[in-house]
Image (cartoon, rainbow, N blue to C red):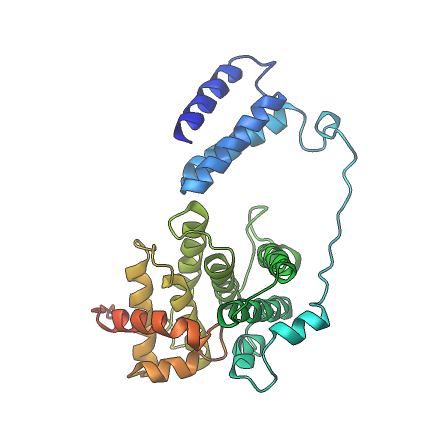
Length: 312
């Protein structure tokens, strides 16, 4: 990929010397390739540079509404998510009295989250049912069920990325949204969970690192005790998000930060052992049979760290 990237940059530089080729179709294709390559390996600053260049190329062609950029009329494409077929739900979803039914209940009933996010979290719950069935059942999901699972995951990813632009006002720049901090933590942690468990974006890939970094930034904006100590239910949600953020084994740079934040919250909550923590995590996106061995180890790592607090 690096050789292809170097060749694309050389060709782009040559095209930019000629006004007639600076914004032709092949220049657009090369620019998109460079953006994709940069995002894949995590070079986000470089990707932003290529995005800026792409914007200039569009401006050279008269802007996004220019006739020469619209080979065909632009039509809005609507998409409505269909419910899981009854026969499939009866086979895959756990019985009504199963302990698994409590998954996401604390998020879905939280007074701090928007109704739109709660709907997305409810759909995430269904994906957890599919995921758990595929692990526990001897045969696992059928090809039809796997196809629906993949479709639902893509729908969820799109919804979690898109809905803030529909319901929250913009402030400052065109893309700067005024998302409530706690809402953003829950949204990004859910997206992080999907990326690691359902889509499997490798933690060291550009996408995996980006999701983890954004989850960390969202948590940084929700201080557990400054200017005042947060309520227990909020601290519990932040602890869950920290577990999700630190779960990918490949996370190295952010891992100490997540562990420190987890220990800080634990001190505020007065948790003394893993059983207390696990009891609180039930009701978030947490499946004991799957997450307990990993999260218990994370908990022990966090408790073994020194924590330094600033004196007011």
